[in-house]
Picture 1 (cartoon, one colour):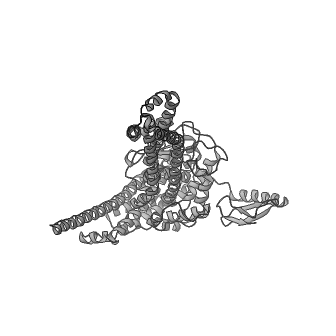
Picture 2: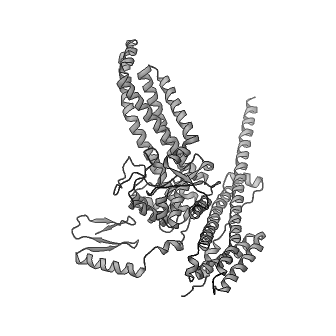
Picture 3: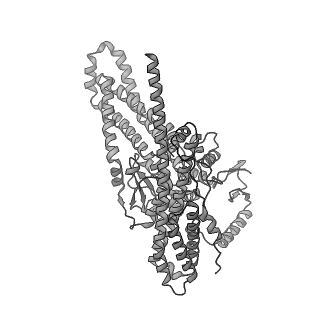
Length: 405
Length: 188
């Protein structure tokens, strides 16, 4: 298990180093521009970063939980939730049971926090808890537990502190430039002999001040998105049942209630983006999470197994890409893994089969009368294509395979 | 002089390699042991749950005696086998799982039982314990695989054979899956 974490962390670490370099660069140039001393700027940047980091390390989880309004539960308060967390803890091989929190909020979401395995917590909104059956809950908790197991929580906390420091420094520097511009100018006039160089540094400082927070944010989002795919893959591996998480994500996608107590910095902690609105599924650079529909399609395209290798293959198939999301070393670290059938409870919620069949029959008839063509997909979905459609290919909304029309 | 330093350097490298390899192996072995203990905890938990379950179900009129007796018998057998080897134990525990799943099928015929809060709580505990058993078996197999890789792959296999580490940890088969398939279908 350790080998996979290490190889996966490598790419994230590179991004974190870039983020750190950005902070140092900003600190140096701001120092040079304002007090004519790059080292002083560096020291200020590092001190601010160190201070915020200490707070985040020791108090981060309790701050986050209290902002979210989470309350800790005992096993007897909600036996099922507690049991499912314990099941996933065992499946992931965690040494210690994480604390379990419920957030009284009708919005549907969940997150994990804590600096290491011994100080970890899992929180879930009561809205989500009510809507999920046991298999789906297991999928969601598996996703959160794998954030703990893969040390994503610590990584994301450190990253968000880096991001926060960069934003903070840039913000104060811009205020100083607007309101305190006079002071720096008179100060700099004393060293006029290097006037030209100072002007260049000033321009660079301003450019960095504007661009650094934007870049930092983009890097932060890129790290976050990658961790989400890995957590989905781990959840499938732990539960041996990708459909559980897929159908939970489907339910999450249908609700558009934003989480009340979330902000930009805490967004990557949640299982789905807490700010999303209906239909907002664009995979752009500024989203903390991959689009839900895509995550569902990847999970559903996992044919014949629950291992990382199978997830990686499904990812490539859905995204039409050569390179996967999980490194080769990780994918082969765990051998072939079979799937398990749905639990009894998962099946109970389906309406009777003959009722579904009858509804489908009527629907098909209606479509045929309107000149729709039907295509049967390998995953069992029947696509209906209107005769007015212009394109030559259509993608299955369930599994992502493309069909020629 | 130079030769002395080279010899010293080589010695230190060898020592580092040995201690690193040895600690890694001990770590892997302890993880396997711990994973095995986890399975044990869950199996005991299941044994403890069964008397309560039987007590609750027994109160209902005309509840099938044979099913209950089969569960009690399988539990006693499983408890007695708790000191036995892996093969014997997984066979007995598999039988207990089969008996329990048969009981759960029979329960479907008693709507008033399914409305009983006490029973529902027990059912949740039992479902979860069954899940925990299979998840801990899953986790055990994962760490056993890692241990086996460590003892057989180069270069850690050298250290393993030097300090007599067992070459292979056995994997646990999903015997319960087979037992469930063998459980009789109940017609209503």
